Image 1 (cartoon, rainbow, N blue to C red):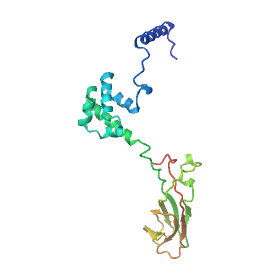
Image 2: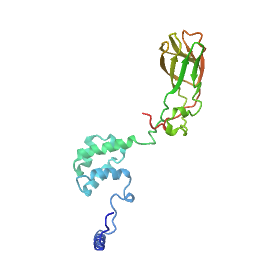
Image 3: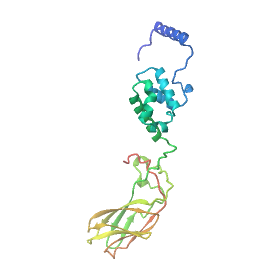
Image 4: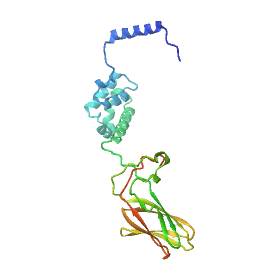
Amino acid sequence: MPASPPDTEVAALADVSRVLDDIYGDEHWVWDPEHVRNAMDIIAGAVLVQHTTWINAERALEALRAAGGLDPARLARMPDDVLVPLVRVGGTPTVKARRLRAIALLGGGCGAESHVNDPRPQPPTRVSVAVSDGAITVQPRRIAIGPEPTQQIPQNAHVRQPPVRSRVPLNVVFVAANLTDVDSRLEVRGRGKTYSSKPLYANANISLQTILPTGIYRVSAADLPSARPARLVVGPYRSSSENDVLLP
């Protein structure tokens, strides 16, 4: 650890502090939150005081205030022919006008009250399908019924995903394996619609991505009448993927 300063140096610094107090008295620092009107005063003042004195910066700040330029929304819309003359007394007016407008745009874009973030959508729900000569099996047979730990990363395996109040259809990816010697197609029927995959060749795999509203669906294989269709239930539960920190 660095050595403590000698007592003589401490005393000398104390003397300097007392002299400054005697000369300037109990004046407040210009950035003291009790003596500025709002945060924009501090931000704009920090820009305006660059390469000039505080006296000039304060003049520019008061000119901005009189023109409504300390309101971020109005400042962001001010054209150069209005903004530049307001800050000219602080020097480098074009540069400072550009910086002030950028700050105003940044502040306006971060307003939580008027720009509420939508819940992060959950990743597609995966359903495995096996097509055999006698039957079609799906796993799981019920989805979107409640929190699904299989959709979560190991770090959050014991933490339920936050539910989302939404009636949007569910993004479902079917991954099918044809265990027969007959070419086919995967078909998902329900709610008055039919979703068909590309050709599902014999002893091959394929995936089918669909958007399924809540309901009951029939999963079958075309040209395989002996393969008994399976039933898939899509529930109303929707969740946010905000706990899945490793998702892109």
